[in-house]
Length: 409
Image (cartoon, rainbow, N blue to C red; front, side, top):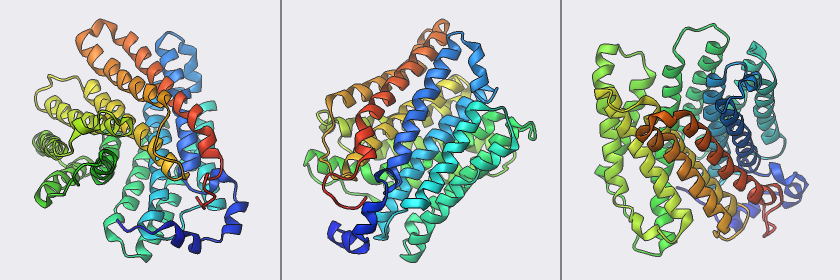
């Protein structure tokens, strides 16, 4: 990845103009990491209370709790984190200043209005339109500096965001009764798109972070192994997104899930996970990546034999993989991009553990004790809310105030 030094960045940006921008809108990770975390706390508390018997709360869930939970966690929460991360990372990739100021505030405003609308209203075309604006805006602003710098290896993120926009539209059409496509089909496709993004980003940064964080020998990339992990990942995505006949997909889907999971597992085994056990910012990333691999393999078993429950495979991938990866990444990125040392407070370790326990409650507990399924939903939701509430409380002053070193960003 192309990187520029801080001195160069200071020359690119007009420091005086930078200081006039509200700190929250100086880089995309700030508003999106903070607000998305808050959203996930509220969403999970509502979800847990709903399953605890407070069915009247459905009126705050777009009048369709299952749809709302799936949509808001995939697009409202995860989508916001992805946009915040990519619009921040593109500055390091290209050397061009990241999206900031009124442009960033506009993207964030569309995201926020859509969230509030779906929290207080019933399905309406207005909220669909509002919710379909912020991602394409972000994709355009992401692609522009990448194209200028001809960094074609990073350009694929922009079309993936547009694919997520199409899937978001399908979600809304289902809610509006304008599509008879099964919600599970669209949500699974969305999870696969997100998973490929997370696997690509994780595969780039985790070995580097591990090498630097443990001060051990550099983890080298083996070309055939990298291709062996990434090629089936893209083929899996194509299989999920294209209208492939069921007779073919019944064979190719479980095969691609198995190969993708297996190759990423081999890749993961080279990353010296045991050396990270004393570094929470590292072992949390390793746990998340492994959970993603296990989730893919569980899906392969589900689609091959049906012996693994779909929901358990899904939540191994989403809570244990995507959720834990998000928490670990935003805890690290928020420190690095605000000029702070990469040292977390002990309470953040509690958040990491709470989210790992949320994963086990939502998957292993249900698998071992099916009679406790509803209780497991409530426990898992509560632990998720606790984890991101801790993050929100600790990182609010970090994300809402200027960098401690006085530099832009």
